[in-house]
Length: 147
Image (cartoon, rainbow, N blue to C red):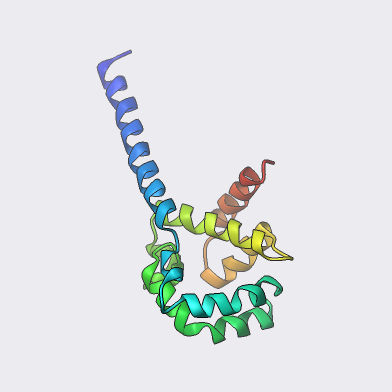
């Protein structure tokens, strides 16, 4: 194997480790703003309410509207939400996308009617992402669900 090939292999490994480190760091602080004085009271109040609502329903949207002060603060503090960015998902990087997608997966597990594939389809309209990205999300949903 040539030195150039070895160097390339090592460089890819180094870049992957950079991403892994960032993801590991984010895993430690994910949504920590929900524990602060601005967000915690509102998230505590709506946790059980949201749990019983179907994602994307009018009742769900109404609950989110009631939570607006906490959500505005939350989106501002957490770059894995498209709402954090001026141009939404288009301004995010791959690490943001991975954290966002894992957040979606975990959120579906908290809802009685949670369904990650359905959320991906609904969120395409909400966040205006491409069919290619939707396919990547659906493939990843299957990966996370062991299919």
